[in-house]
Length: 277
Ligand code: EPU
Image (cartoon, rainbow, N blue to C red; front, top):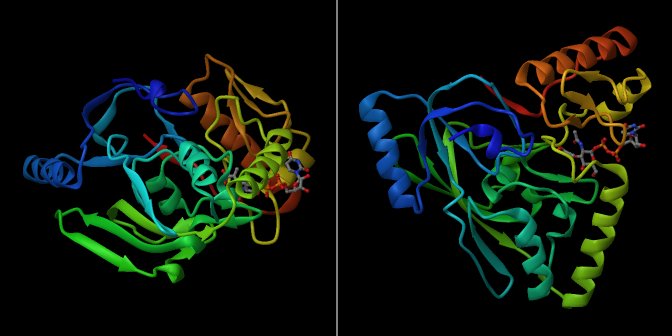
């Protein structure tokens, strides 16, 4: 299994041990085995917010991609961690459930979205969440009812646990209206972000009151290329793999852009993308 085929950036080497549990029970068994064997591991959601090293990744990787059920009853939406956001947003349009529109165009899985409090200008997923279920590393299930205060800018605070499921509360509406709002937000993103390019989304977190993309752009770095990775000419906080990009290229570009922003504005940018090395 090569990570380049499982990440939106399209960079990453082999993984020694790869688990794809299909249920919470299977995930618990996998965790038990890993604990017994003393093997360190990481969790991969949709692979859309990670930059992975090219060489062999040490330890094991657990992918939640097969835990992907989603169903709704009334205004409640119960979704497993591995469910993909794009089809989920589309199904909410069909079901006439409003609330998920701000997530239009965001790739990745529900679990990743919860951990990162995914969203944008029109709202974040945290504000819709009624309940989160996790497994601790010891395999114990935790239920967080109404965890709104756990969500801050690009962060859902479930560190050291694996998100397995969430319940979202949406607002019943007309399918056509939900569809229209979803498409409007998507159209805006298509113009301002390189959605179809190979990227890991925004590379840096926005500094308080500012925009990392605007700062990198103001340093004249749009289109700047190192090896096979370039600063997107569309939005400077997206780094695009042109096809032959390497992890070292990506990290060198992170270093360069961070240094330029520091020199010009005295602002220390913080990575939003998770680095697996
Ligand atoms: N801007 C530039 N040059 C650029 C990029 C942006 O001048 O290269 C300017 C824009 O013109 C605008 C301002 O900067 O005036 C803000 O830009 P934008 O509206 O694109 O928002 P952002 O702050 O760059 C944030 C999130 C995005 C989210 C958008 C839209 C972060 C790090 N980024 O970007 O989230 O999609 O708002 O809601 O919070 C992500 O987290 O991966 C992500 C893509």
